Image 1 (cartoon, rainbow, N blue to C red):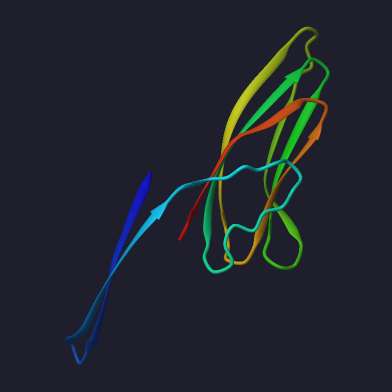
Image 2: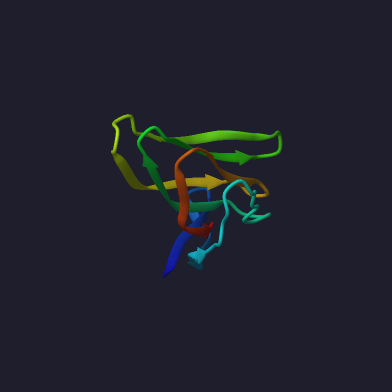
Length: 129
């Protein structure tokens, strides 16, 4: 899917338009293969929107935690947490949750998985601005 972002920058001097610049940039979503517990730097020069679908499958007595972290230069910081647990015997639950966040230019992100459930990254897409 392509997205066209159009913007016009007008410069005025004493109330009179002296310059008008139209920006038109075509952008595309990029599918990314991402593994849990490994970091990725999507773009050194521009901010990037990340859209990720996470599946969590948890049986009785198990639990799972997903942490989404971003590092802007001073270490990873958790910006979102997903938790799933089941207490009833014989019960289980499967959820698919979309997570959307922005990674600043020249920064990295990682998605951490922990617990006794079975987690999967279903899809990851990036859109650079």
